[in-house]
Amino acid sequence: MKAVIGLLVILLTGCAGSDPAQYQYYRFDSAPGTPSQTSDADTGPTHKTNTHRVYVDQVNIIGVADQQALIQYIAQHKVHIANYHYWAEHPKLLLTKETLSSLNNAGFFPVLSAHASDTKPGDYRLLIEVSDLAGHYQQGAILRGAWHLYQITENGNELRHVRHFEFQSALSQDGFNALVSAHQINWRKLMDQLHTELGK
Image (cartoon, rainbow, N blue to C red):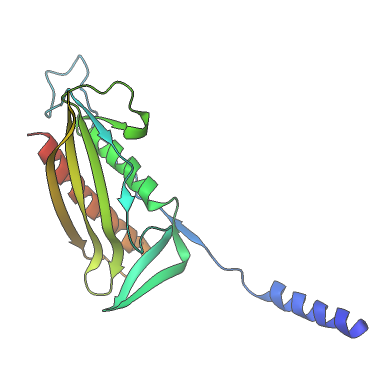
């Protein structure tokens, strides 16, 4: 019995002596937004505004990136799933919030589709599907997928536009901080693309 207790003490001491894993959590940097409407003191709007609401579905991520750990493609057929480096929240939630914020700052009227209550003809519905959200050993951060823009009519949702997208941004340096910054650059490129389409 003493031998068993002694063995347990040794094991527990060994576990206590090792360094605990250092988990890291990442999110996009907060950028100052452009207000969607100007104040009465302004001479006029500085950008085009849209009177129709844009109902935004939660971003859909398919494939290996549909998890909280950061993903890297480390060779032609190999994927590395980080053990200690995670998004601060699931990326589909992060990207949905980023989309809502970006559309609002661009002068549109975004609403999460789950909260839709008073849709009317002329309003839009936006679905973004991400197929790749990963670091790449040669290409830096990559973002691939497609977005679907519907317009609400008296007869239901009519598909107005489908566009596949692919963006790549080089990392400014090695490391996960640089990878997350490059992901944010890619997402902003996608948002610029959407702003152009919605502003037509």
